[in-house]
Amino acid sequence: MSHNHVGVEGLGLVTGYGWGREVFWEGMCSGKSAARLVGGFGPDGTDSVWLARIPEGGVPTDGDGLFGRAFLSAGREAVTDALSRGWVPGERVGVIYAGCFNDMYIWREISRGDATRSRDFVRAFPSTPTAMFTKEFDFHGPSLQISATCSSANNAMLTAKQWLDVGWADDVVVVACDLSFTPEVVAGFAGMRAAVVDVEPQDACRPFQEGGRGFPPGEAAVAFVVSSRSHDPYARLLGGAMTSDGHHATGMEPSHSQVIRCVRDALVDAGVSPGDVGYLNAHGTGTEQCNDAEVAFLDAVFADQQPWVYALKPLIGHCLASAGAVELAAGVLAYERGVIPASPIVSAAHPRLLDGMTAFTGGVTLKTSMGMGGYNSALLVAAPAAA
Image 1 (cartoon, one colour):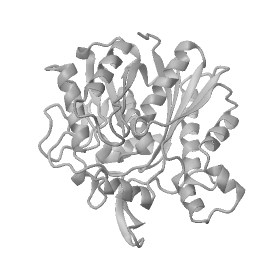
Image 2 (cartoon, helix red, strand yellow; image 1 turned 90 degrees about the horizontal axis):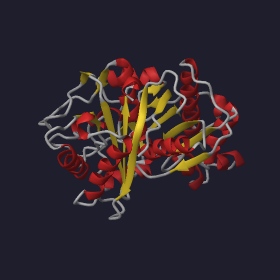
Image 3 (cartoon, helix red, strand yellow; image 1 turned 90 degrees about the vertical axis):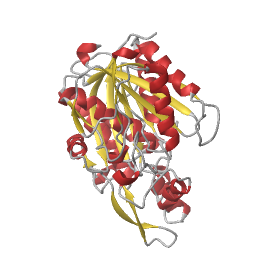
């Protein structure tokens, strides 16, 4: 059992709402989806789809690609934020990048023969933005990329905590960046009947509600500065766990035994009893199998003392490797700002599902993520005073 509680010292975000932490928060609090109709899709490129795509922006000198600019912008904002809250970097600042497809835009150009410069090829490597980021801030701790599909960000946060617990790093910056929804990727997810792009997101994506069809695609770059030498943290990471279904490349194991074990192990690791968990910040894709899995662990682990539930993908979209990070960022900001920007309920719902902006009453938050391939993860955070 681990008791070295790690503080979340800084946050940086680039999302479908725009560039910056405050833009993200204002967008979430509006109760309106970040998605918009984006053209250039379909077999002949004339279709439009609902997509929470990151708008153009960033620092031009960070490079040609939106992926690298978003990565660096989120990381830079998180570091600046942490410094303003009193954080002093240690000698060994580690960096963990959580990613899935990496920069799909440049790979698309390369595959079409449109990228001919050597720097275009270098852009395609997932190590490139990490190298630029560590150079800019003179960070020389361990660095690593984690790829566990939609559980990548949770797994990265838990790995950062492990580094801090064993003394491999004094601080860790975790950057989750995923800008993957090219027409080919959208078509793949839509073909699996997971992504829904032909109607507005809040009509299609209904986690823990009746009538859901799936998730809207989304993009995000999210960065956290985490440290065991806390100063003025937003919240503290108490612990967590990871398991694997070992069942199927895309489908979830129907008994949900490993998802349930993951949540139970996470509670033990964090030293938290089920009755102490006030909120579930759910994976909440709006698909039937995800809804069944999360209802299963709520019933099995929490019985008649179930936490309040919120799921944010109807607002921000499913951001793949960044999904857990962007949702955790909203949950962490709730500790400071006293409200949860939950998605509005649109149909018959689970009795513990929150409906829109809701006052936050504190307590421990459980964040779950479940990725294709059977990657299950759960982590627990709490207010600084509660840790």
